[in-house]
Image (cartoon, rainbow, N blue to C red; front, side, top):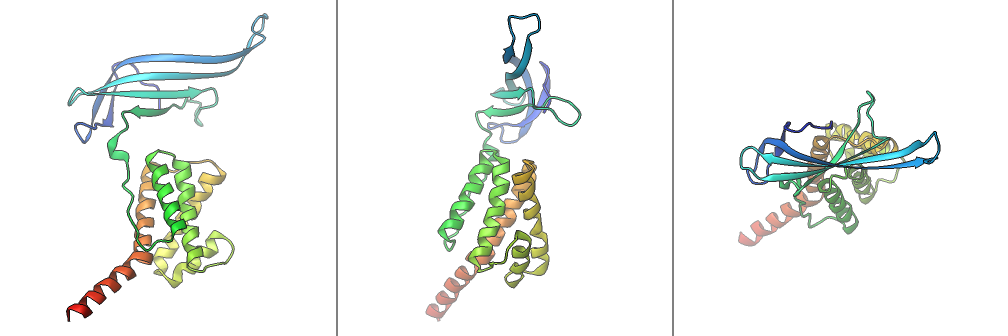
Length: 224
């Protein structure tokens, strides 16, 4: 995210309009901090600096306001040498929250991991969310009695419970978790959302579908 200029426009989700609308930047307030060594000598040296910006955006559709709190420091640059800003919007954008589903037959430990995955996604902790998704997949393997070493081998063993083409595509969770845990590379938010959808489908298939089918079968037997 680059630093916008006063009067710039950006499309953001508006909590009032309930869609993405154009927002105009009306005001910016900056705050700086730096640490200097040898400050009182002819050769002072800045060893660390950071910068905050508070940006005031107005929706062009309904005139409601958003405060963006942006942050950068001396180490936050991309491969092209451009400064990177991290930002938080106030009030929080309502559209971004992912509602957790309830799985009645899910083991308590798996339910806890699933809940933390959703919480980290909603808090925009993307690296933790990716690592949590991989941990949830490994937890499912353990719950199904798959005890081989290595996440790749564990996923392959899921062919006992899932179609082979689904199992093959689940290896994306392995790569996502590796990049997040070992390279501190956060997946795109859209990728995480798709991964959560896939995981919820898996939980429903592996734990809920049989339970619901048995309930339906019992109901038919009673009614007949």
